[in-house]
Every structure is written in structure tokens, then in C-alpha cells.
Image (cartoon, rainbow, N blue to C red; front, side):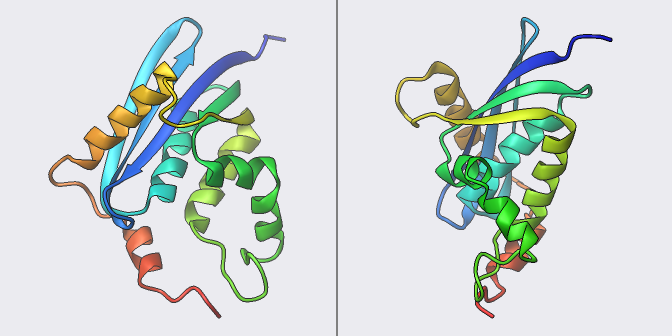
Length: 165
């Protein structure tokens, strides 16, 4: 039986306006190699970009890995680490009796990837001179400034749909 590979993923999201044009940045450290990923959307939110960074990082690993994801997003880290997302899922993607959970499309993708990989989420303070977090921030901001960004269709639909039932 082969030993499970290990990876460290740093992630960040950025948004100019919220909603607005946004981007994500990823630094992937695995087995002595380094990869950087980035991308963005025209009309999205910071939380969606934070989540998408984690998704893109995990998707880039084709084999099962033990992964530590470092993110400065309390929304992302706390939702997983404190079990909020699992409660929302168990309650039909409702945060409480009146409010739908946001970003369900991305939560479903992320949870599926977390089932495949052995993932631990760690919060890192943003803009605190963490070299890899700062690099992710740079990548995310640059991606958000690209011309001809694709439309975040799900994000746009969600932003125009009332959230209270």
C-alpha cells in the first residue's frame, strides 16, 4: 500500500465591490514542487472567490492527498471546522428556519473534494506578512482586474434572488 501524498494549499479571494469583479489565487506546495493558480469572474462575491480558491486547489490534485488548506477567510474555515456547513446541508441547505445557506453550489463541490482528499482547514490572518498568503492575495487581485472575465452565472442568479423565505 502506498503512502498518501501530502500537500499544502494557500488560498485567497478578492472582490472589487461585493458583489463586483472578483478573483481567486492559489499557491499549491506538494512534494517539493510549487504551482500557482488564479482566475476570476465579472460579478461575484468575496466569499465565492475564497471558496473557489480552495476548490481549484483541491481539483488540481489528481490523486488522493492529505491536504492542509490555509485561508484568511473565517467564512470558509469556520463553516467547515465548526461544522456549520454540515448542519446547513442536513437542514436542506437552510442556515435557520428562514434563511437559505449561500453558495450551496460551491459548498457541494468543496465537500465532495473533501470526501476524496483528507483535508484540514487552518485560518491564517490576512495581510500579516505570510509570504504565501500575500502571494495568493496578489494573484486574486490581479485576476479580478482582468478584462473579459467570465460571468459567475450562479452567483449572479443568487444575488438577484431574495434569500428570506
